[in-house]
Every structure is written in structure tokens, then in C-alpha cells.
Image (cartoon, rainbow, N blue to C red; front, side):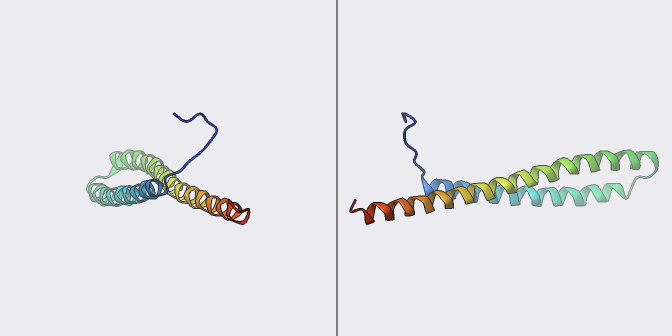
Length: 102
């Protein structure tokens, strides 16, 4: 068990996780888009107060869905950036050790 004095990263695993997150985010976006099309079909069949009420609830829900999408996109970017920065640090430290004869 790590004692907290060191840190390690498995680049392949973080890159795989980032790709899984990218694919899942894309699949969710596709499903949301499909659902939106279905909702629009239903919206065309109703009118009056029911349409207004449904539209308000749907709009509120879409704000939350869009927020979820932004969070997922931020997560994929953050994971990719973190992995790249750790790799850059490793290369830099490796070069220092090599220059010092290590």
C-alpha cells in the first residue's frame, strides 16, 4: 500500500479511461439528440396549456442535460490534460537525471 511519499501513473490506463469517457459522452449525446427528436414529434401533437406546461418542464430538463454534457466534456479534457502534463513532467525529470549521470 502506498505510504503517500510517492506518486505513480499508468499512462495507458488513463488514456484508455479518457477514450472510454469520450465514447460514452458521444453516445449519451447521440441518445439525447434522438430523444429530442422524439419529444419534438410529441410536442407537435399537443397544444394549449398542456403544451406550455410540457415545454417548460422539457426546457428545464434540457438545461440539466446540457449541464451534464458540459461536465462530461470537461472531465474528458481534464483527464487528457492531466495525463499529458504528468508525461511531460516525467520526461523533464528523466532528462534531469540523465544529465546528472543518473
